[in-house]
Image (tube, rainbow, N blue to C red; front, side, top):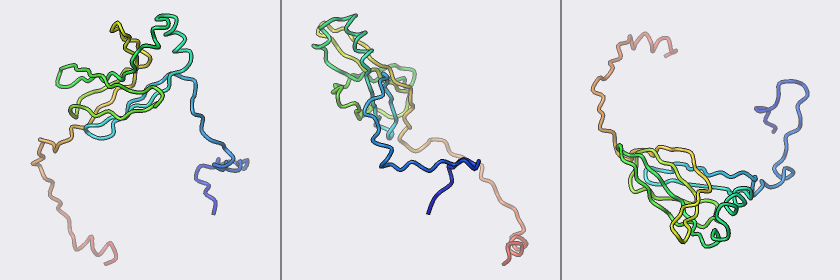
Length: 161
């Protein structure tokens, strides 16, 4: 059985590409990127790629001391009007990491970088902003319930009953 859901409407439809003939997805795309995704009220998932041009630029600015840097994912939060940050040690070669948040709710973003031996932070990538769900039942109660008024017998007749 063949699915034509995504086929073009013109007569010149191409045959679908089978996963076996398409080949594997590339491991890298050559673009520096850091993405942050909410997983649940207390957990986020970050994934990244650091392109060679980013490493070259960092080496120009900081030299060989980069090799001594400790890789971290700096998590920044905006919650109840307060800003807070915390660092998570990561392995850059892992290319992704799960981060447990100290609390749910609020706006979050991440910065991937290196902390040099002298304490300087070398920024490699900045993520998008996300909002974690609150993680508790809402305090808002809707006391205005709608009352349906209908001729139920007439509706039953119209439905064929």
